[in-house]
Figure 1 (tube, rainbow, N blue to C red):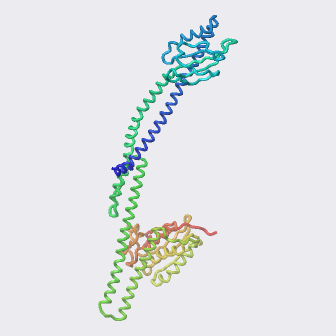
Figure 2 (cartoon, rainbow, N blue to C red):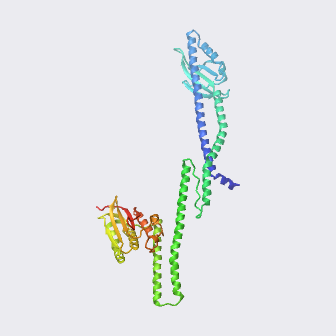
Figure 3 (cartoon, rainbow, N blue to C red):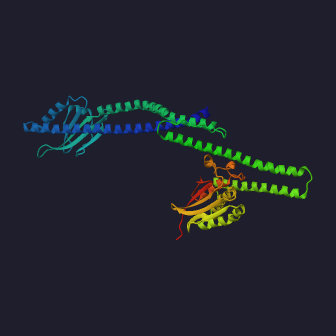
Amino acid sequence: MFSRLNRFCSRLDVKLTASYTLILLLLALLLCSFFYYRLEHNLVKQVDRMLHDEANEFMSEIKEGLNNGGSLVHGCEVFAEDIAKRKYFPVYFRLLNSSGGIIFQAHHAAEISFPEYRNQESFYRFTSPGSSGLFRAYEMPLRINIEGKYILQIATRMKQAENILENFLANIFRAIPAILLLSVGCGIYVSRKPRKIITNITSVARNITSQNLRHRLEVSPADDEIRDLTVTINDMMDRLEKSFKHMKQFTADVSHELRNPLFALKGEIEVLLSQKREAQEYREALYECQERVDYLIKMANDLFMISRFDENKIHMNFDYLDIDEVVENVYDLFLPMAEEKGVSLTRCLSGGVTLLADNVKLSQAFSNLVDNAVKFTPAGGKIELSAREKDEGVEIRIKDNGPGIPADKLSRIFERFYQVEASRSGQKGTGLGLQICKRIIEAHNGRIVAEQNEKQGMVFVVFLPMYRST
């Protein structure tokens, strides 16, 4: 029982509804308190204005009576008759002399007990022991003639104002439950949408596995934060699906690439063990096995480097380098290999462009590109290695006139393990060299593209940001 209640209270829509209800209830109470205060203030102000007007009317009656030869008491009696018919705000008054003695008191004023006079103009509240309810009084010192100094105390009941305030409070207490029910209903209605979205997200998330990443959330047509959240989650799912797809493809490619050399190595060993052989045969077989092990070691090293790039853990030792020195070193390294194969290798230097780069990594990238050019260019072919300043950077081009790559396959040559054997010379590699080149160039904030040579062959174009030496 308690566990169900705890689960119910911990639901998002219940929490939102409780929050909406509490906030709305507090606002309603604050507004009602403010209106009650303003109503009470205005009622008291209205009563004070009425008492002040009655006091002025009393002065007019007294002065008019004295001017006509009447007495002070007669003027008070006339004023008492005028106010005797009041229904909602009955007026009680008495006139005192300067020492506090009563000169005149309306007969109905005897029903209440006026407080001690203050001998100053003021408004105040008081209660009468013989009557229920509050009274509002106005006290005003008077000078009726040259010698006469008097004090007028005039009061009225606050019952009518109290009734208005009580009715207002009663209406508030009737409205509070309605406000509470309305806020609960509105809170439940408003919180349905986020709860539905969260429930949908939870349902989709439960159905997602490494074999099933195609589920997506329904995107709301409204341009709001909920739509932004849904689109963001769907984008995240797209990235996860692509990542898992790449991982699966990578695992399948690695398995495929490792299987062939391992099977070949196993076959060589089984042939050797099948019967007794001469020492020369053993040496030749071991040489073949060594080549296959070297191939596996190179693949493992390449995969390790790519994994370091993926995890952003590759160490880059940046320093200011003269691009011509890097190109010259790569040229010197591959010139003997090219001459042995009968391929012409030339270079054209930039004339003094300085780069902030990693010498070892950048040389490795250029070496992979030139090695591919030498490997796939037939005897009598030509390879051009050039560097030139261009667009606040330096452009390095490796051009060959080998068999080239079909235009429909150019977009995939930088993928892992992708090889275009039919379009090249048939030589076998790991299929990771161009991927490593691309990752090294991008680590230098550069870019690399592959283009077909105008006549025949391939052109690899590398662009790197430039830093001039001063």
